[in-house]
Amino acid sequence: MNLFDLTGKTALITGGAHGLGMSMAKGLGYAGAKIIVNDLSKEALDKAVAEYRKLGIEAYGYAFDVTDKSVVIDCINTIETEVAPIDILINNAGIIKRSSIVEMKTRNFTPAINLDLISPFSVSKNVAKGMIERGGGKVINICSMMSELGRVSVSAHAAAKRDLKILTLNMVTEWAKYNIQVNGICASSTASIREDEQPCNKFAISKILENRWEDSKDLQDATIFLSSKASDYVNGHILHVDGGVSGINEKKFN
Image (cartoon, rainbow, N blue to C red; front, side):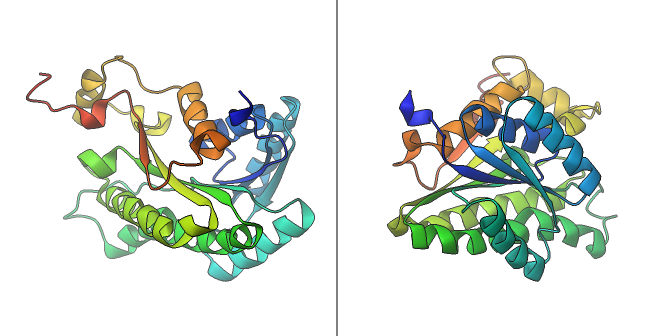
């Protein structure tokens, strides 16, 4: 079990004050990692950090915009000076702008590309510089089931997440020689997406063999694995934590 022990490691989770980000951060904290969470809201961060610490997790919060290149550089330097060098990076921050394609304005398409695709590029490249110097690290990009199946009204999000998978592979080609493993997690859904009753939701849950959405532990286990020594020879892999829905052919399982 020492393969999964993250004691002595420091993890940065973008968008780690709520939702999937908080779930993954808790999992890393339970495994012994020191966690640093990012969000735009200082109030949300303070609340989240208090919750982490109540669970016995050493946690710190930094409010900054991951889409602002200069701010990202400054904040990563600050984090590594004030807390510790970053061993594990979880690119989780994301956004969904819901609109049909014909009605969506370019100005509403762009924010999803900036946050879901460009910010992982910017944060990763700056964190990787330190990982390269230290001789290793783990980067996990949070992808989406929608990048495989598509979904009504989320074209920008789905397109960005699809491209994030290719970016993940390109990171591997450049950083594997430095003992940096870069992988992705493709989760089935978030609570906010599941709240509505759109046909895609009903279709998706009907195709999950376990007949349920993932819960926090499912995602925590996958995150711990990809952050630990157990995955040292896993690189460029997109791990689908979705109950099998993305790999199921409707014609075979109708």
